[in-house]
Length: 115
Length: 111
Image (tube, rainbow over all chains, first blue to last red; front, side, top):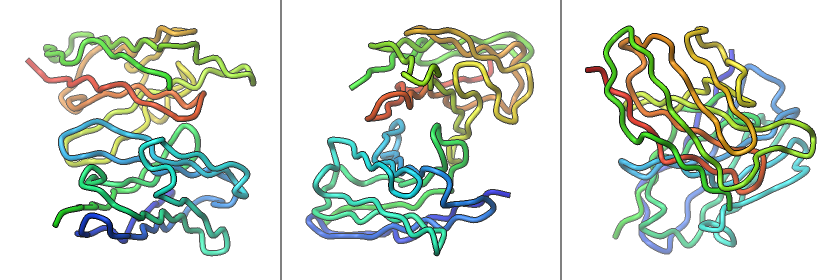
C-alpha cells in the first residue's frame, strides 16, 4: 500500500526558512516522479514543483522559483522541499504526491508564515 | 501558463441524479507522446485530494458511475448517479505542460 507522510511544517516568520520532508513507502520510490502541491486556507490547489525519477527534470511554479528547492533521496525513499524567504502568501497545506498525474497524496503539512 | 476553466463552480444535485462538470483549457493538452494528461480529482472537506480519472477517461479505483470524456481543450466529468459520498470539490488538472495547473474547483452538494 502506498503511503506518503509529510513533515516539517509549522509557524515561521516572514523571511524565514523551513524544510519539508515526505517519507514514501509501498512503491519503488526511485522509479517515479514526485510533486509538491499546496492549498492555501479555503482556496484551490496550486502545483509548486515536480522532480523526475533520478532527478531527470525539476520544474517550479513561478511563485516559488528561486526561493524553493525540491530534492529527493532515493536511498531514503524521501522527497524534500527547502523553502526560503517565506512570505505570508506561502501559508498553506503542503502535499507531496506521487507520479504524474499525482495518483497518491499525503495528508499534508501546514505551513503558516506570520509575524 | 495553461488556464483551466471549470463550469459550474457549484452544483446542487438530488441523490441518484446525474451531475456533470466541464473543464476547458486555454491550450491543447495533447502531449507529444500521444497522451492527453487531463485528470479529475475529488476533495472532501479536511481530506487530501484523491485522483478519480487520468488521461481523460481512465478511472483510478473509482466506481464506473464516474466517467471522463473529451479531447483537445474540452473535457467533462460525469457522475451517472450521485451518492452522498460524492459531495466535496472536484478539480480538473493538466499535467501535459509545465507548470501543471488546476481548475478553480467545482463544489458539489446534495439537494
